[in-house]
Length: 279
Ligand code: C2E
Ligand code: MG
Ligand code: MG
Ligand code: MG
Image 1 (cartoon, rainbow, N blue to C red):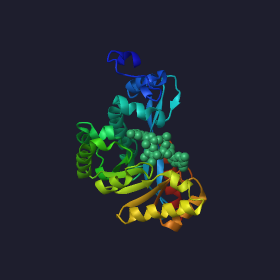
Image 2: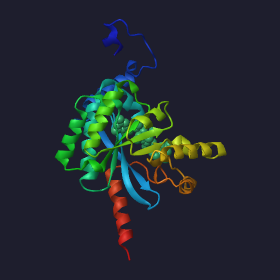
Image 3: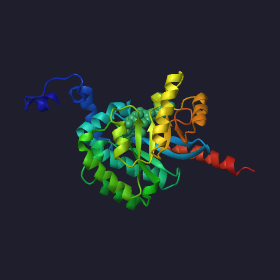
Image 4: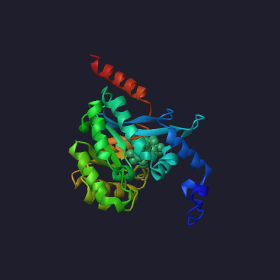
C-alpha cells in the first residue's frame, strides 16, 4: 500500500495507519476473496429477555479466517474492511446469511446485525437490503441494525436518509456500545432508536457505588426517552441480579450465552422447547 500510494507523494508513514503494515495488507487481500473462498462466517450470540428468561433474539457477529485457517477477530478486520470499502459487499452478504441461517428457519424471532457508517452512507444500501428481504421472504420486523455512536457524524444527513428508508421496511435501529463515544447524547437526539445497548464497561464498573450510580443515571436517561435497554457483558450471576434490581429488560453476555455457530442455537432452542413441552 505504501508503494501504491507512493505515486501521490503525500502519504507520510504512520505506524498507526492500519493499511501501512504487511499484516493489514494481507487482511485486505483476504477480505477481497472472503465470500468466494468461504473464509467468512457468522456467529450468533443470544439476547435474553430477563423477565421471561426467553430468547428475544440473537446478535450476528462476523468471523473471518485467513486462507491458512488462522482466525481473525472483528477488531482486526472490520477497520480494514471499512477502510477498503470491502465492508459494503461483506455487510450485504452477512445480512443475507442471517436471513437464511436464522430468520427463515425461525431459529430466533429477531436477529441484529452490526452495520458501519460506511454501509449506511453507501449508495443503494437500503434498496439492496429490501431486495434481500424480498428474496428471502423475511419481514423487516425480524431484523434490527446496530450502529455505534462512534460513527462519523460528517455523513449525518446521508445516514439519516438511509435509516429512514430502512425503518420504512420495518427494520429497527439499535444504538450499540452506548456510553463509549463522545457523541452519544447527540445520537439519541437525532435518531429514532428502538433499543439502546449499554456498553459492557458500565456493568464491569458496578463493583463500587460510583459505578453503580453512573449506570443508574444512564438507565434513567434512556428510559426517559421511551427506549428499551439492553446491557452488554453479562458475565456473572451477580450481573443478572443487578439487572433484576435495576429492571433492565434485555441482556447479552458470556453468562447468558457465547457467540457460536447457528447449530448451537438450534440445539439450545430444541432443549428449551423440550423442557417447555415436558409436563
Ligand atoms: P459489538 O457489536 O459491541 O459486539 C459485542 C462484542 O462483545 C462481540 O465481540 C462479542 O463476542 C463480545 N462479547 C459478548 N459477550 C461478552 C461478554 O460477556 N464479555 C466480553 N468481554 N465480551 C463479550 P466481537 O465478536 O469480537 O465483535 C467486536 C465488534 O466488531 C462488535 O462489537 C462490532 O462492533 C464489530 N462487528 C462484529 N461483526 C460485525 C459485522 O458483521 N459488521 C460490522 N460492521 N461490525 C461487526
Ligand atoms: Mg453490536
Ligand atoms: Mg456492542
Ligand atoms: Mg462493543
